[in-house]
Image (cartoon, rainbow, N blue to C red; front, side, top):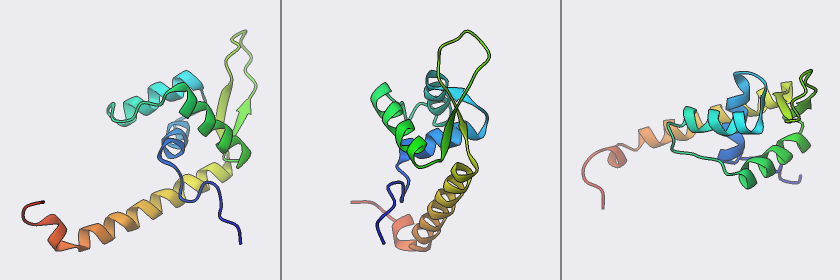
Length: 112
């Protein structure tokens, strides 16, 4: 079976999906939302943002939507497949954290 392109989900794609959970948005809005939801730890440049959006569109995780305003910006919406994808990634990350927390030696003492 071929490996899925978005498995595991790249962090930029994960943050984009999380941003769209809160509602439809255009690229610049997604960039701002990601910076806010990560307290500035992740800032998506246009290249990363739009290549990630293209991958998410191709995978069916998001869709482009029509807007009624004269604004020419493209807007995106999370699809049902995108909701499943982000939920699966959250579960995968929770499992990684659970395993890391079980490593008592990792969380105790000094680091090299």
